Length: 532
Image (cartoon, helix red, strand yellow):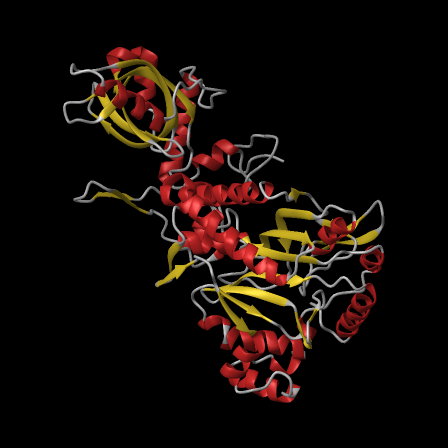
C-alpha cells in the first residue's frame, strides 16, 4: 500500500497517509503541523528529540527546598550549583537573548532561566524549537531573581521528549492570599476521562486525587497486616463466578475449550482459604460486573474483601468503623469530609438501623407480609418502568435503595436484610426470615457489604439451588450451584465474618468527587467517534 498523498510505501498508513503527510495535512490543527516541522528541524540539527534517560539530582520540590535551606543558613546572596532537574514546560517567555520558563514534575514547579550565551549554538537553536508541554532536563545553578523567585540558571539544556500535540493547559490565577489557582483547559468532561494522561498532566488537583487513592490502599494494607491478616491473590478468570448477585463478563479459554468468567467478587475463593486454616485473609483487587454505568458504578472496580474466622457480623461492624476511621485519619488527617454539599463524619460509633424497620417506615409496607404485587405497584409508582420484570429480591433491593439509602448521609449500618436477598449469609439468630448481614450506607450509596458467613453446607446447597431456579427463570444476576464451594464447606468452615469495601466509593467520599469516573484512572466509556 502506498500513501495517497506522496506515493511513499511506509510500513503502515494512517488514514491512508504516510506519517509525514498525515502530520502535515491541512486536516491537522496548525499547532500539530508546526510541532511536526520543529521535530524535523531538530533531527536536521542532530538533536535527539526523544531522550533515553536523565540523571536528576533532585525533584523540583526538593530542589526548591534545598535552596531555601541553604539560603536560610547565610545572610549573603546564595547560589546552589550542580543542580540537575527535569520537568514538562508549563510556561515560556522569550526575551530574545534569554528566556524564562516554568517546568513541572509530579508535584513540583520551578522556574528556569535560559541564556543563549551560556547554552551555546546547539542550546540556542533548541530554545527556538521548544513548545509548551515539552519535557526538558536542565543542569545549572539555583539562585533567587530580583523579583524573588527561586530559579535555575541553565548551563545545559537537554530535550527529553518533544510533544506533537498541544496539551490543554488552562488559565492560571493568583489569588490575594498567594494561592495559585489553575482553571482546566478541558472543555469536555468526557475528554478528560478518555485522555487521562493529558488530564493528569495539566491538572495538579487530579494528580492529588490519585495520590490519595494510592496512600489509602497502602494504609489499608498496613492496618490489616498489623492485625495478623494475610494478603492473598485469588483467580480473576474463573470457571464459575459467584459471591454476589450480578451479571458477569464471559470469555472462552481455547486450550481448555471451556467458558470462563471474570470474577464478580472474591468471596468464595477467600472463604475456601479459611477452610484451609488461613484464618484471617484479605485481597485488594479488581472485580467486574456486566451492568450499567452511573455515578457510583463502573463495570471494572476495586474491592477490599476480608474474612476473619471466629467472628460474626457484629464483630465485623466494629472492625469496619474502626478501620475506616483510622485509615481516613491517617491518610487525610481527619474523619470529617464535605461531600456533595453535606458534611460527613466517619468517627465511630456509626448509626445502626434494622432493614425491615427502615423499609416499613419509608414504604408503609411490612416486609414479612407484603405480596409481590404490592411491591411491584409501589415500584411502578416510584418510576420503575421495568417493575413487571423484576423478581421479589430485585423489587426489595430497588425499593430500599430508592426509599431509604438515598436519604442517608452519615454512615449507618443497615442490618438484618431479608434472607432471600442474602444467599451467602447465616440466618439471623432468633429471626430466621432475616440474615446476619449489614450494609454500611453513606451519602446515599453502599460502602460496605458484610455477613456472618453461611457455613452450613446443606443450607448453602439449598440456597444455591434456589438461586439456580431463579436463573433458569430468567434472572441473569442469580447465582449457579457451585459444587466445589459446597465441597469446601463440607470440610468445615469455622464461624466467619467477612466484608467487601468499595475502594472507589471511599475515595469519592474522601476527595469530594461525586462521580466514580473521577477516581478511576481509566473508566469505561462509550466508543470515541471521529478521533484523530
